[in-house]
Length: 471
Image (tube, rainbow, N blue to C red):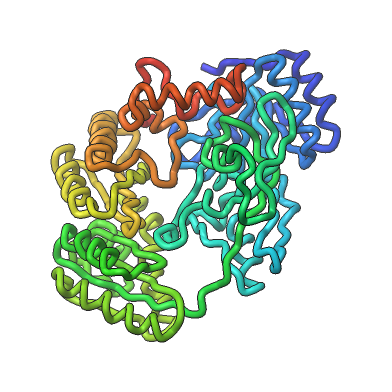
């Protein structure tokens, strides 16, 4: 059932504040803002579209005074339920705030508004010989504001880190409606608490990001790509550990298991070895002379742990063909069954072989269609379960399997999420990783910032008895 929070008087006040934008209240519009890339549908009471930071701040002041839930939202590619308006109230559509994208080459920074597409930042930086490394697979549709909220990563996280490593300043609306600046345009800044790092990855629970200053780096001179093919998923995991402990640091290291290889070949034949148990795609970047030596060394290490074949791309065209296989995994696997559960449990690099074994056991135990791929170089695997959400019996097994995946990651010294965030889907498992005291400390920070619990409520923190529900 829909829980209505806003009164007619509230709506009148909201419409009076939003002088330059729009307030949407028609049910058809509200349904468009009721879901994301995960599970669950929740109708807000109103959706606000405005480019004015002052109007948003005034709305937050009203919300704080009247205890109205507020949900910042970008393009809602979230896979964890991050922007879902689970308690009604107001959704702020920040995707309309896409006007600012300024690159300052001498300072190696970009200043952006939250609605700018991540891919647009990549393009603007590359045009000046620079690079913004965080590259989530959704970058062509995801907004930088959403990336900041979830602390997004991507394939290049292995060498270059994730979003928080490139944010040096923010403009933020606090839950009390004040506009504050954190950090700045200097690379070194140790003045007081690092509020920038606290807000990045807080999933909209501590404030609304209205501008960001991002660090850029020079673009590498050259890249080299190779594909290593294995008859054992565990051997593939061992090869990853061997390469990383050898002193070689690839810019990307992606794993595909047999199920994902087969799915891609059935979707678009590329000549992949469907009888292989796994393959690893490796990209290295840097000086051309160093690349040649590192590529040869990495190939030898893969063969030493059981790779049956190593293919090294001869030019950019062959590089693109090798990486095309990885890009096609997601569209390929959803043709098998209509529902895809995308997880991103992450383990220490040394535990990748053990995690691969555990995932194989989970696949057999719960009799599910489990596809394993992801950013294996930094331990950030993406176990995807392909299922049909209309099949209740199958979904019960899937829920048990997801729980088992999280438990396996934690037991191996890992984490619930490497880049997808917690949102609603992983909240029930937070205490499993953090412990009661650790979770309580996070709650205290949330309460200090947002005592009236208006800012993206229902996320990260579980309510008593909350369980994973994939419906």
